Image 1 (tube, rainbow, N blue to C red):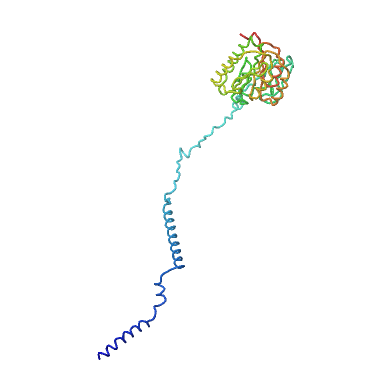
Image 2 (cartoon, rainbow, N blue to C red):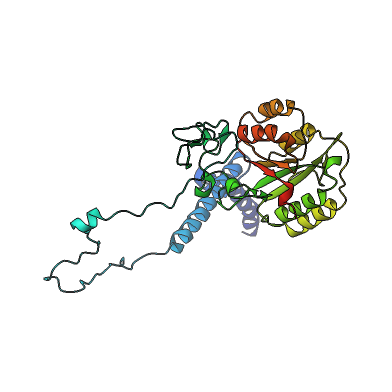
Amino acid sequence: MQMNAAATQPGAQASSTTAQSAAPPPPRHLRAKYQPVTGRSLLTAWTISLGLHGFLLILMFKLAWLSAIPQRDEALPIALTDIAGDPSGDPVDFASRPDLSRSAIDAPADAAQFEPRAYVDVQAATGTGAGGTGTGSGAGDGGEGVGGMTGGSGIDVVGIGTGGADFGSVGGRGGSGAPGPELFKTGGGKARGVTSVVYVVDRSGSMIDTFDRVKQELKTSIGKLQMSQKFHVIFFSAGDPLENPPKRLISARAGQKQEFFEFLDTVRPEGSTNPTQAMEKAFQCQPEMIFFLTDGAFHKSLIERLRVINRDHKVRIFTIAYVDPEGAELLETIARENGGEFKYVSDRELP
């Protein structure tokens, strides 16, 4: 019995091992569940995960942004108006009603305060006596046209252009309408509104006896200029002109005036009379007007030169025959053709 038991024990073990080895494999779905994920499957899984998390993150930000927008639940304000006064009464007329009475219609309107200023020139206005007439030429502030005409009454009839009305006082060139620069009682009102001026002054040897009076008149004229105005002074004789530093237009401030006065004290008369180069330099400054003062005769070629450089008549030239009337005829012509005024200063007018 014992041997049968012993003999059967190994056989049982062998049959058990055979039974285990002959057991069927687990199902395919269980094998796939417990197998490790590698290769392309792993990459696909990560891509799906990242995409899902990104979508959730965007969704969270979107919800947070929408919740931050203020919601306007309040109602819009409504304007309320109250009726002032008695609605059943007469309507209120806020407009002034015109006075249609006959007296108001016949009443004269206020005339504009404008009085044209006659241009006075020795040769531009000629022909006195009954029916006498004269004509002016050149171009002034109002343009070219007929100048002043005088009749038997002696009253100047003002036309258009040079020798015409002074339009500076009503907003023409120069704007302000204030009297312009004045030298030996010329300019002033007839240069109304001028803001820039060049003084071209004779300092030849013939001026030696009266040059101090010219200096004093220059100081007076420039001293009256306003800060909004500009000036320059050029002295001529033979050779190169003598100019006030810095040889251009400068504003009429107190300091600039004082510097000119100090320069003026150093100027001495000498040489002969030749104003052509000085006049050319004056036009290079592009002023609105020029004072031209001399006590002697000069070559008439200056007139032809001025007709060229001032062909557009933008610069008005006021001329002064000082003490000696020798060059008066040429000075009168220059003033007439360039929209200015001529003045003769005799020795009786000097102190």
